[in-house]
Amino acid sequence: MQLFFSGQYSRSEDHITITEERIIHQCSRVLRMQPGDQIQIQDNNQRHTIVLDGFSKKALTGKIRDTIRYPQETKITTLFIAIPNRRDKAELIAQKLTEIGVSHIIFRQASRSVLKSVPHKKQERIHHIALEASEQSFRTTLPTITFLEKWDEKYILGHDVSILFYQGGSTFDSGSTEGMNNRSGIIGPEGGFTPQELEYFSPITTVHTLGSSILRMETAAMIGSRLLQQ
Image 1 (cartoon, rainbow, N blue to C red):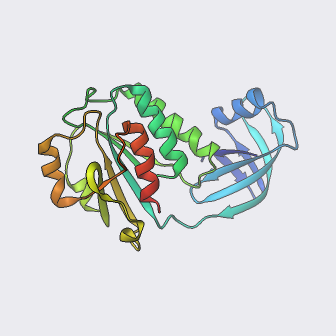
Image 2 (cartoon, rainbow, N blue to C red):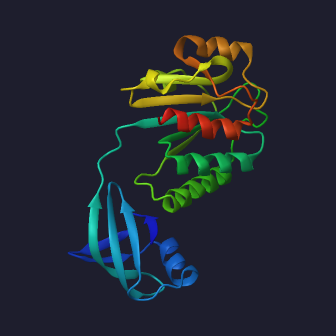
Image 3 (cartoon, rainbow, N blue to C red):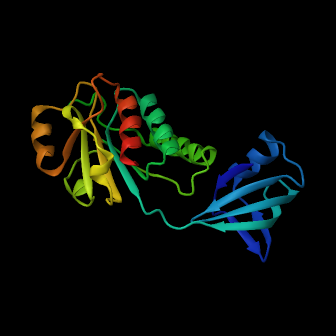
């Protein structure tokens, strides 16, 4: 069954009218759905299963078969990632971290970042990729994606634990973060952190290695985010 994240609908009792153009196009033109086919709409913490009964260029209509309400997430994971040296890597990272279940994805400039910012159109594309990944992986919430050009330690200090994933650190032990539900991790750029950055992060993070291999940053981001969720 196809899941869509959307708040663009109206309802009257158990009947629903969906007006989001993206969903209308996907159901009508791409999936070629017919009356009787079912989709799910995720809106905030509730998911509606809908039996479609009407198609037009401006709306889909259907009957709500059931609604599931999900509790708010209790474990929050945030990953700070240096802006990659190629913009398609940012798309891959956003897609995979969304599938893994990261709550907040934050791209930030680092001293050795080749690219210092992400253009607005590219940001929009990354948000769209994360939306599609959320739907394909049946998440219950969308991740937030932020692009920072300036860094401030306040972004780290609000978490129960902040981990700098870097060669030379200790091996990560998931038991060390037990009971800590608001966790963050930091992934550096190609070329690594400068000594000044390592000195800056030292008093506000713990340093853990991701193994003996030198990883590409997109690989490190995926492994690091998965460890944060254990």
